[in-house]
Amino acid sequence: MKKWMTEHPQSVGETYWQHFRVAASISARCLLASLFQMVHAILPFVNPPFGTHVDSMKDFLEEVSPSNRKKKLMK
Image 1 (cartoon, rainbow, N blue to C red):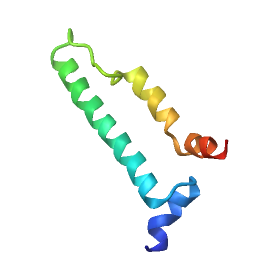
Image 2 (cartoon, rainbow, N blue to C red; image 1 turned 90 degrees about the vertical axis):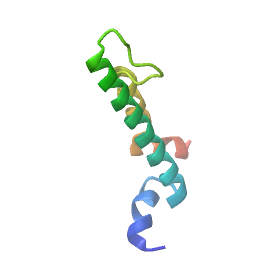
Image 3 (tube, helix red, strand yellow; image 1 turned 45 degrees about the vertical axis):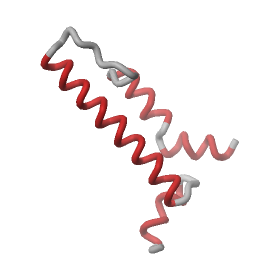
Image 4 (cartoon, rainbow, N blue to C red; image 1 turned 180 degrees about the vertical axis):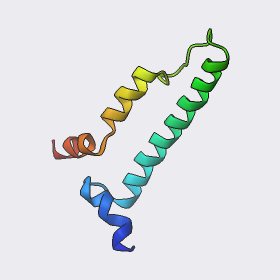
């Protein structure tokens, strides 16, 4: 695999496929949150479910940040 494909994953202590899985799961959760926020914008009485409200997303993104993932691997 080309170096430019693996350089960043290695910098956070992951293989290409581990990094792919994490990035894909973050993308999926952000997509769901975006869709639920759009529903909430149209129908304000519908609260975003499944931890997709703003505070939950902020906490989730902090937890899965590259620096925090690297710290977990070092433990």
